[in-house]
Length: 250
Ligand code: MF3
Ligand code: CO
Image (tube, rainbow, N blue to C red):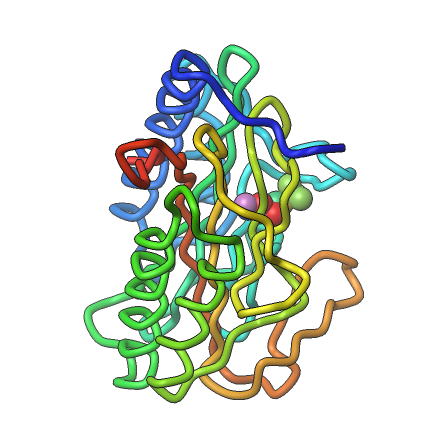
């Protein structure tokens, strides 16, 4: 399958699905507090997505069981919501949500602190990971390559003493949740595809406070840091346009 470039009207549709994802994430962010379970977030997301007239994108995708991925502390991505996973002060939780509206997908993630104070290391991890996403988005312009996006993430993250996960990558997005091309968060020779007008990319840095390696738990989904260090994840969908990068998930 080749890369599918989107017309202006398709990008407009993706902005609508992206906006729904953002409204869901905003509501969930406000809910995050000690004592709230990741299943509470899941239920609120399911309800909100329906209210807004969209459908969840993750549930049933490769048999994934939920609407959200909720990844706490050393969990990198694809944590499965559970009533047993009760958030406590000092935790960090990545909330990743995808929806489909009118045939077009939106996908975004944020990582949020639980309670009023988290460790300085976790605080820095959240700031650096989010900033690395914006560094990456700046590179999403015609004439650059996919590798410039990952290069921007990697450079900024490593200069700040953290590491970038290799096993999971961002992706093209459109009428499918995952389209070509893959969007790694590191510079790679295999990623020299040129960016063209109309490409839409889900850019999603996953950053570990310790070593970069990941492993997947026995539930076959939850990816955790191999060394038990903390991990953060932020994601936006971004259109490459003649006027530069346009964030669709806000
Ligand atoms: N945002 C993640 C991704 O784009 C979430 C996918 S979870 C899945 O890969 F369940 F849908 F696979
Ligand atoms: Co994604």
